[in-house]
Amino acid sequence: MNAMDNTSCFLFSISLLASFFIVCLSSSITNLTTDQFALLAFRDHITHDPEDVLASNWSTTSSVCNWVGVSCGLRHHRVIALNLSRMGLQGTIAPHLGNLSFLASLDISHNNFNGYVPQELARLHRSKEIRLQYNNFSGEVPSWFGILPQLHQLHLNKNSFTGTIPKSLGNISKLELLDIRNNSLHGNIPKEIGNLSKLEMLHLSFNKLTGSIPSSIFNVSSLKSIDFTNNSISGSLPMDICSHLPKLEGLYLSLNNLHGQIPSNLYKCKEFQYLSLSFNNFSGNIPREIGNLTMLKGLYLGINNLKGVIPSEIGNLQRLEVMNLINSSLTGSIPSSIFNISSLRIIDLTYNSLSGSLPIDMCSHHPKLGGLYLSSNQLNGQIPSNLCKCRELQILSLSLNGFNGSIPREIGNLTMLKELYLGQNNLKGVFPSEIGNLQRLEVMSLINSSLTGSIPSSIFNISSLRIIDLTDNSLSRSLPIDMCSHLPKLGGLHLSSNQLNGQIPSNLCKCRELQILSLSLNGFNGSIPREIGNLTMLKELYLGRNNLKGAILPY
Image (tube, rainbow, N blue to C red):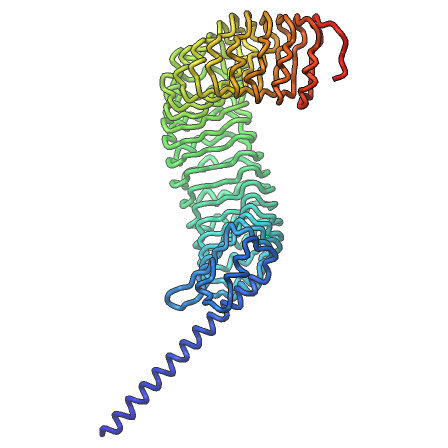
């Protein structure tokens, strides 16, 4: 081959490469233009953009890859992600969005989009994540989600979807998260959901779902969280529920119509952190095996048809933070082992038939306890003075029991306390003045407790108080004439059925938030103060059965 042939061959090669580059560049520009048209059509379907971000920023004078909320891939220079969450946008989704053929992530959550999700989005075959939550989308959940092979996360919660859950969702083999909470879905949970072998989060709470839970779901070994709260799901739980759920951390089934016994097999869910079965119709005993769930933080079994005792094995749950067993017909004493769980923040055993006394050292191991709810039981004995060691206590509810003795003065050391309920017990003695130290107290209810003596003046210096209820005691003497000088938030003053006397203080007018004033069935004398007419928020006034005199004045 001569020199001229070599030159001709070289020039031909250069020409071929240049043509290939021009074709690729043209194709890239054309495809990016397709993405631009799709996004501009999307923008045109926005009816309200409070910050005018899209109107000002999404301009044909700049590259689509520089637009707010848009991300492009380095290789093909195509739109791969659209994130317009929390921008206050209103409107509908343009079907043209389905032309973003390289889109992997779509996030328009926390806006005010409405209408149907268009069928054209079924062309987004590269989508790995679709976030439509916290909008007002309506219509049925699109069945075409089932043909998106790369989808990992599907967020549809907090919308207005109706109809049933499509069976086709069981075809999304790579799906890890399915969240359809807070919609208006009805019908059964499709058994096909059990085909999702990579599913980790299944959240269907706050819908209108019925029927039983498909057993196939309890075979998805990848599941970490199952949330079916607040539906109308019925049936019983399989006795081997945890045989194939080694990773399950949360099971939320409260507010349904489930029945039968709580499976003892639950102990095999070794990673359990939250077990919520309250507000159902479960019967039988609390399984002792629950004591083996050593990772458990939250236990909610209240408002069922349970019976029997609280298993002492619950004391083994050394990471437990919340124990809620309210209204469950439980009997026997509270196991002392529970008072050794130092991680507990809330103990709620209200409305049971628990008996026995509280350990005198009950708060020696509760540095974090913020709420102790033991009302409406059959507990007796004295209220332990050791309560003062629960220094984080904000709510103490011991009313409607059989506690006797006096109110421990040490309660005045609970400086974090906001609500105190000790009424309807067999208490006696005087009202401890130390309660006046509780400068965060908002509610004080000591009704029907046989208390004697005067009301300590220190009580009327607790400026945070909203409710004082000392009804039906034997408290005597008069009220301080400046009683409302330091009670700017007081909304309810209940002092009826005592032996209080003296004049009704005119200073009451300074309790400007007072809505209920109940002083009847005492020995108050004198006239009704004119200043009561300044209590413009007052809704209920009870002054009868006293020794008052004078005319009813036209305030």
